[in-house]
Length: 181
Image 1 (cartoon, rainbow, N blue to C red):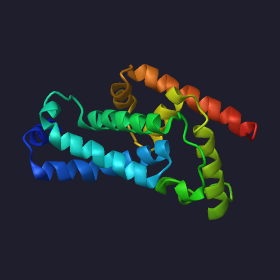
Image 2 (cartoon, helix red, strand yellow; image 1 turned 60 degrees about the vertical axis):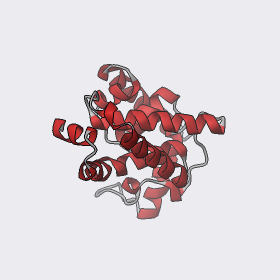
Image 3 (cartoon, rainbow, N blue to C red; image 1 turned 180 degrees about the vertical axis):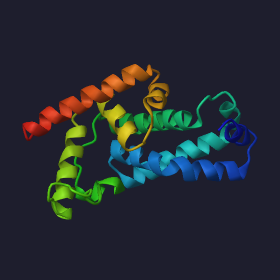
């Protein structure tokens, strides 16, 4: 990955395409989950990649390109949310579910596709109600497929703190789901 970072810093167009192909889909899922808007998510991800090209000299100092990109995405998403003057995305509906929740896994307790989508939508609605620190870590872990180490780098916290926030978030989700909130 060090070679990729060097190629990006040097302005290698094929390296940029590789990074977009490699990380773009997960970045979009995270932005979409946090912003609740396909259009805003696309704009946020595009802004990150444009900034990456314009500030390519900063990539030379980045230890992890993926963490660097998601940290940049976090800042862009935060700016968009502040611009909206709200902290929590609301109003999820079935059409906003991620592709990963589009079909039930094998052996999903007899749920048909529609029931599974409704349940997934309900659970993501509960995720939106988590405290911001926990919600953002849960979304980065599930939608962004980041490791706790990478999440730690994104938020400027230790990997252990990221893992704790994730665990606390999942525990809170379980309690909310059991109460059928």
